[in-house]
Image (cartoon, rainbow, N blue to C red):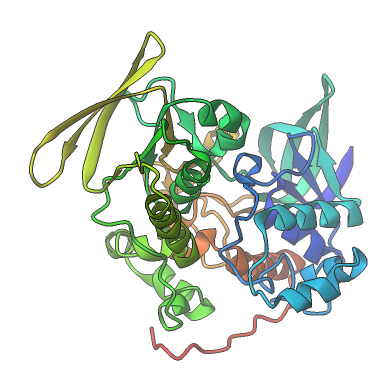
Length: 414
């Protein structure tokens, strides 16, 4: 039986960054991913859309600027460094970020695609991991585990036959062929889908955008505000009582679910140019609408909602509806076999080192990238802060400081 210092489960950007950084350690690890290949949010790789993070917030740079898996090294290796410099942009196309991830995968020998971790049993000195691949079941032994199973699309009850934004590109051509389409939800994904449909809509086609939010809000772009994505703030947030953390999370909507100002500007300009050219807008943008149900019958979606402040009942019919209703953490069922300490239903207790707390001592540790917002705040889903998280996890597993945690104090005192 093969033995590893650690097994990483799931290969998104977080665990891919972990495996890249682990290359410079003495740790012997492997990453199992059930999908056949690396594809990052493939349903939302819309042409022309950019990342919301700086290009230096890649998989490794904030822990090791000289690492061979850096984005700059990717640009150099693919002959794109000079053109990237010439364009003078801090943020990169989302499609290029996906290619960068695929490039890093090809540099590593520790990623196993098409491998599904079906079971984990706690053993005296670690974990017995059962892996399914090509109809065969094998077992490996790991001292530690690092969970990176991400989040799955969430669709509320009562929403029938809708398309989640995570599948947008799969249905894009069908959507653009329909006369009445609605986008329901808020945030960057909703805005990008609305803009993409709006740009190609004919005079006969209607594209509406409905959200329960008070306003169509831009992403918080203030430098001081962004200091919540710092080591100091993560430490501060983690030390707070559970109820205080829950209250604070509700105040971060503009940081977590706001829309890039550039995208908002593009939407406004598209609407303006259409009217300037004499085209009908046929696009209603409605805020403060609580959509209660979307029923499907005879090729028609019937949307019913209520204006949150006037009480007006809103009923409309559409050919198709796209929902931007977010994601929910994916926690494997085998976790229930472990003596996990839960802070609340579905929310486990996690140390500042990203180790899931157990009610009894185990031979190894379960670290997690998944299901962390309640314990570590908005930085839990920030790509740049994942590099810091990986440094902490690797240092803990190695039992020494492999990657120094650079505590550059922010200007804000938390």
